[in-house]
Length: 245
Ligand SMILES: [Zn+2]
Figure 1 (spheres, rainbow, N blue to C red):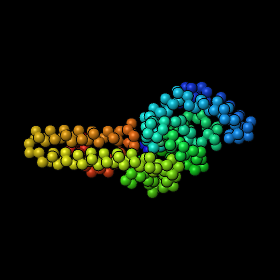
Figure 2: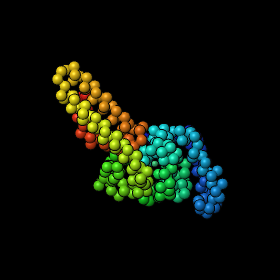
Figure 3: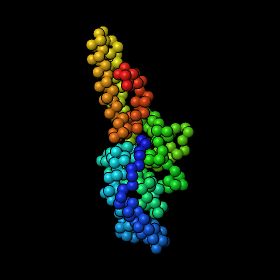
Figure 4: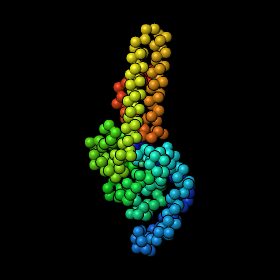
């Protein structure tokens, strides 16, 4: 999970939020409760939140990834417009821009109708996940200072499920192998006998640094996991100081 920034509310929502919300809330009142609204009617009332204009702006703000698990579409099902506070409990928030979040089908399904207002979990648009979580090997874990909300978020979204640990393990192999390549490049650089050779080998280090940094780019899947690996990687920091960045 990485920190995300909310974009400006799309015009379609600015113009229709009020009437869409009123219609839904009226239906809840008429039928007594949300779950009693007939399926077809409920779908007609809700369909607007999946408007393409809303999806475009929302999905762009998460770089086309799931806001919770950082997978890309196709890996964990399509990205969907998810309601952070569930619309079944809070229909008055069904068309509120700040309540939307792009989430994959797996996270969305796992979170289901968890009541985030009474039992809060981390919303990466509001809180920097780097302050809440760290990684132990291929598992995400909560920092001591935020243990309760961190653990609940992991459990509710299923952030340590096999579907996420497996790809993290694959990336970890890549990261270790890039790190070994950096170690070798640094050794070659230190052993270079002439200035020309040193310059040439410094270039090799720079290339190796760029290769490993690609994995931590925010647009890449699991970039938070990769970023933390780099933060702790001694070879990476040594290489950065050699290339003077
Ligand atoms: Zn997800």
